[in-house]
Image (cartoon, rainbow, N blue to C red; front, side, top):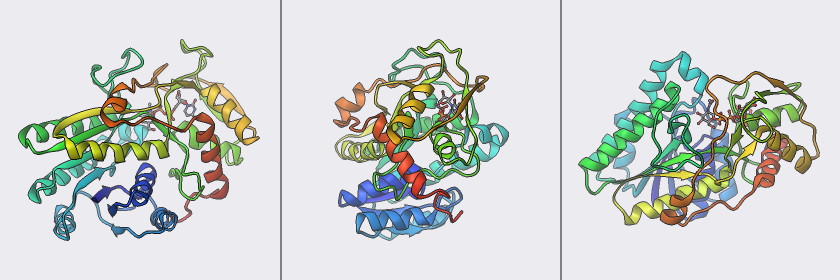
Length: 338
Ligand code: UD1
């Protein structure tokens, strides 16, 4: 298939481009490289032994996007391009709403104009209302605690409405849990700007001794060891999930939300311990206060992904820790071109 991948140079996007190229698909990436590296795409092509097409522009530029659609028929779009830092979204809500909503609207407009009807959307478990029972399934109540989450939820609603108004439309909303790890080659991985917000990139940078210690955000949650529990998923499993969603979209119309997680929860201390023992490195940590907005436990009900996509995860927590560290060790400065 000819697949348009927006945000294809980012963390999940680059791993998905690799899986697409390896699966024999033709890949067209649109990315403005605001938060990503061209180096990631160079390495993806090298690993796959195949080329992709790259266009650098902001997804809100509808004229340029139309030109991409005019170059040849697109079978499916996968929409990753978005701003994604929770804290930043609280400080700059307008930037988040403007960017994430307008890029989705622009994409839908071009798709409808060119008769492209299959869309895989990069959503997040963050759309579930706080205090949802766990494991959380796709029919749980929705609601968010920050503007980033709201942009995901609002885009989901836009896409549901577009699918409703266009009966040939097929849209899969993929709600990711916590993607970590890297391609097993160690050539591509997560390369956050500045101080990492998320757990695994912080752990790998502590292991590199870029930071003295990790701060564990609270040990007084109602969990086995008191630290927060999350459903960590290997980014390569997540990437495969997009190919399964594409297959599903080939045979179905309408709009469906699907969780992509492992269905298992690990605490912060579990992750530190697994990382240390798999990699033989130390991750010094201190216990700090809770981070505002964090929940005690989040993990996925994975039944719908199994039933509709025939997809489930294959890689375990040790694989995730090993691959995250291999990438970081080989690339201490990330891609080094930002
Ligand atoms: C976060 C975002 C979520 C987003 C996801 C993307 C928040 C509140 N949520 O999820 O909206 O979709 O990233 O991957 O930011 N932790 C520490 N020390 C750290 C960093 C994290 O103890 O330095 C803990 C957290 O309290 C949490 C766990 O590690 O229990 C995972 O945190 P993180 O990787 O930031 O992911 P989420 O908060 O689940």
